[in-house]
Image 1 (cartoon, rainbow, N blue to C red):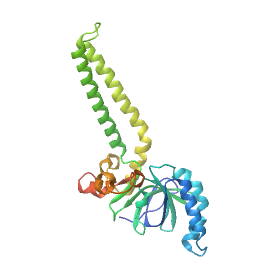
Image 2 (cartoon, rainbow, N blue to C red; image 1 turned 180 degrees about the vertical axis):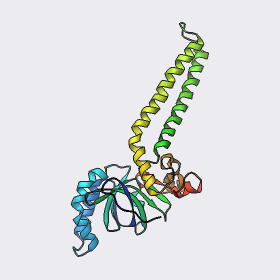
Image 3 (cartoon, rainbow, N blue to C red; image 1 turned 180 degrees about the horizontal axis):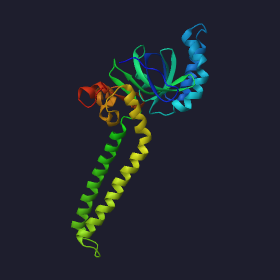
Image 4 (cartoon, rainbow, N blue to C red; image 1 turned 60 degrees about the vertical axis):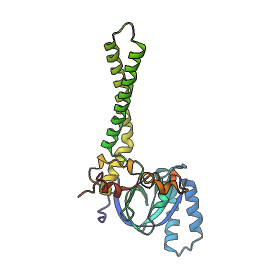
Length: 262
């Protein structure tokens, strides 16, 4: 992994540093209370404790932007290098403490907000949405095509077994049904693609800045942590909050489904 380049004043950028002082909780309020309680007990002379205390106010202000409460995910705060970073990922508790990571972040005051984190040592990437923009559209139209084919099979079966509308021939009935099914299925796919761009476009940006080739075409849905490590997860007490946003990118590279940018 390459060292980070210059930091822009706004927007997202990549940073590569060692991750330390990880704190994780299911809800942001629980997390902020945990941090406040823990670091009040630490000496003001402790550099890390002082840093966390100094940034507690900024964390509280950034929390509504960077974190949300929910049982299916984990909010976290940590140090990346000497900077405070926070965010929400299902599986944040598995972030590698004491190891170098590459993170795509934005800035809220003095706090970094994590949008994606990659651990080269573990071969894992933490992202909230696993599809790039083109992959999202492809998946939507693939589902639309499946729904259209199913609708046509049902329509043909109805015509064969139940007969047709007395005002239309079989061909006219089939043609009108085809038009209606096409409009409903593919119109819904177009509408869904537009809606999902709010997730897919930021994901594409994260994949690009983490160093992946063809970021808009990436689809890591088959490489979720619980799918690749099914036996391990099935025999553990973990819930989806402990792994839902973790993806095994090195496994995807080994399978030829993903490449790093050259």
